[in-house]
Amino acid sequence: MQGSVGRYKHFSAFRLSLALFIVNVIGAVDYVRAVSPSWVIPQERAAGIHALAGEPVVWAGAVLPFITVFGLLDVLWGAYLCIGKKWRSGYFWLMTVATWLIAVWIDFAHH
Image (cartoon, rainbow, N blue to C red; front, side, top):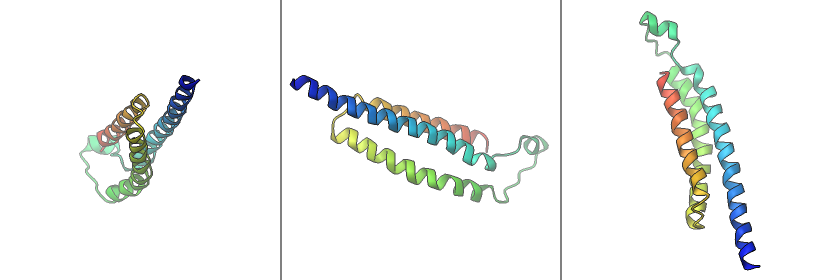
């Protein structure tokens, strides 16, 4: 009986980590969509135009909510995994870090 209780605790942490990973993937996709108005227009880049009117302000305004919400969420999630020694569920956290790095790379590739 004791073994099944431990299995359910891991299952709960696994489900929580899976849910947080899915939320982060949705957030990363939404991040890319939200920052896309600040990207350089390909026709302007081809013509050699380097306009910097309001793009940094637009970009910062779009990024700040994502950094605040998901940064805090992921730090708390990582602390929960470390304190509870839930190493198997930590793979989802690591995949989340990779997902956000890819989203930021996509964003920076268009500036």
